[in-house]
Image (spheres, rainbow, N blue to C red):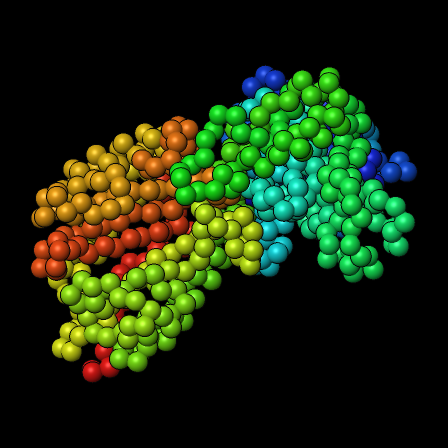
Length: 592
């Protein structure tokens, strides 16, 4: 593998940025439209000097490249950039790169000739991609904030072109209003503004933000065009744009003067002209049309229905009749965008799991049987004593107790504003058993329950594959669970009327990002979630239970163990980005 690092300084005005000349010629030279894919190398011309800004390749099946691979994280404003190119010497792809660049300009060909001479000295190598994002080790070394910004850029680079073209949408407009939660707010970097994404046919989606007030939109370096509100102090008239109240007060402002312009239509300033210049044929907007809310306790705003009737009217007024007639729902686009992960997200999930594990370890370490109350544990989820009684917060932990601790957060019903990991969520359940006097291992029934947990996990690991929908996978898993001698149950409730000798197993293997829970391998939620195919690197929870009947406990009792392991689906099948629990922790009793 040959790695060439090209450093370039880019000086440009994001407000006037466009695809530099030559992109179309290069893609044509590589046979765009003939099934081989498209190569795009972007340049910026300033005072007769051409800088290589980015290179990307789309689905070069002919050359063994089967997915989008991008070069540097393009950003603007005169900063130093790094572009990484990986090219196999003397390959067809390598020759086509040279030919395309030669067709573009003699100046650029000279640069490629120098690159050719360098590669010619390097001998044979096998290349997997023309350009790459930071490797996994580099991603894991980023701070949480830097990693969240990397994810935003990667999603725009890798996922957005796919989902816009698959859904036949030329322009996507996401309208957000402060105070109205939306599933895309964390993805975009703001809860206020009009965000417009345009497919201009050059392989890259143009990104623009209007009327937003978040500094993060500027700092994340994911946008090409940013129209940030400006506020003049002191106020002598109605402000033209809205900023956050905290920023307003810091600038010396006082209460907003009344009137709808201060809160609503200022976000749409310039939107109509911007859209008309691009003349899109189909405009996707964030409102629901057919995709219902997942299940009754999941709040609909966690999906894609953030557009109010007022905002729709303001958008239509801004666009005019010609373009308003081209509006369609972006519900499928948004669902696809949220459900498809990028490699940088895997690094974040690993960070989250490490953080969860550390917090759970601290909780277990503070347990002193006979002293510690269950309510003293930060992650306490449940505690059952030796006779099967569920205990409360004031209960003092003692021998024979089975404790379940929960760490992390999930987006199903409540989004914690203090959650530090953006729109990505992880939850882990782990168990500890307090040994009784004379015990050195788990009691037989608890040991059997955990053995059932491991057998069910193996069934899931062996039968979750790419190329299937959530519903198809669900039917296979139900059958395999029954064939293994368990009873599959559709509800997460123990059924005391079933065979008392058999363990009952419910499943709800749902996605974690953005609160949409899809694709879903589960009986829960609407059919559209099960109809979605599992995408590459699909991140989801292995959420399942084992209910072991315990007739010796009163009222037909049962032992319940629930797991919530984070996993992904790759070409190799189900994989873990962080090891799931493999046993129940043993906690020494104070009597030992």
